Length: 367
Image (tube, rainbow, N blue to C red):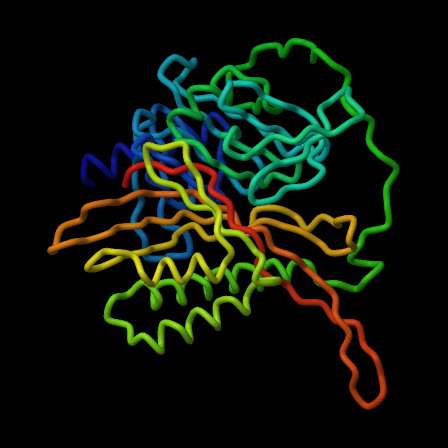
């Protein structure tokens, strides 16, 4: 048996003996900004033992705590890694079904109930308050939702450093056991249970979440065609027309930014795509990653339902064979679930479809 295998086996044995087995899938965020989905079998003795999820033949990896910033598990458990913590790690569970949490750039944790989310902001009713406040997403580093879902907007290492002592949930048995001080304000009382919208309207919200992600990916494919300098002019224009049909209307706004500048500009979707086609580079490379539906549908005053799809975009402009500009931008797309009537055989049927809407910039860094 090799030394590395012996080390992995010993670490796993120590971990299991302590009764702290996770044996579940998690998303690992490394201090260098890299993100990995892994099946984690152990978090102990200064190492995380994991392997690629959904691969029966995948070999185990051993990652030292010092390389890691955070791990988010499917059950709402969050591991935070920092050498100043006892044992180098802290574990909390934020999926209590009652409290949403925002971490801001001011290192403030806002506890409360999220009312709605868009591509640009979050409305949350803070604990102990009766009125919601609006927090712009460019001021938010992390959203922890009561159902165990989350949205990471800041750099993993920076966010981990802010969270190492923050009150963000219930400490788990695997974490340091320190008494939590009493909350500064009383929690918001749970509202009376309401009849779920799915039952009232017979809408398969989960299916429409998937369709929203599919439409976002379709938009990406059209953008690649439009930006490609070898694409024929008529093909680029056809792709622009097809991309616009994915949106609620042509008034949908796309926000753009430049790394190192606070300036942001907004363009109607068609104008944005036309500008993409005309960029003054010899070659343009655009890649999207981490395209994910990140919020539940919430009903708006107009009767439509609104949600958010998040993605990471890498943009590179090339001249004379060399990259002259590159950035990585976290963007959010507001998606709208809207009803329409279909008349067939004299019968009127109410149907629903999901459309893309405004695209907002959360943050931009040099690529």
